[in-house]
Length: 88
View 1 (cartoon, rainbow, N blue to C red):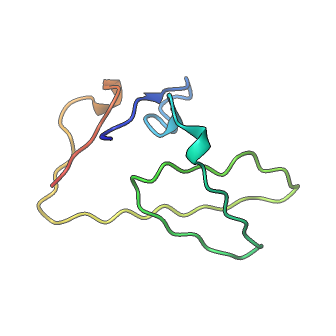
View 2 (cartoon, one colour):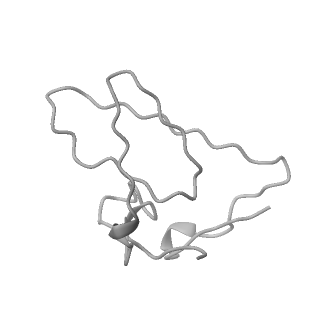
View 3 (tube, rainbow, N blue to C red):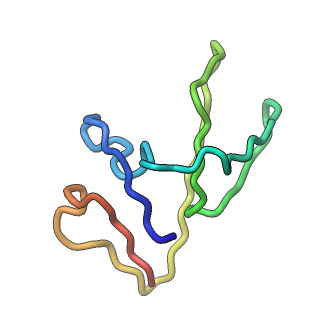
């Protein structure tokens, strides 16, 4: 499907380009039940989300990205672009 359009909340670039995919097909959602301490790994192009934290405890997340040595960051002000994708 290619790069999907995203909304951009006014959060001083926090989650810019990674929040609020527009026109997502919610009928294709898959729910994954997890227990405290569980870990979930997925492909970075998988549309994903966790919903609101409804507990009194912190939710921790770690995001790790790997790229080949020949990859380069986009030039210019990439935050101003509605979609950013660099493929090596």
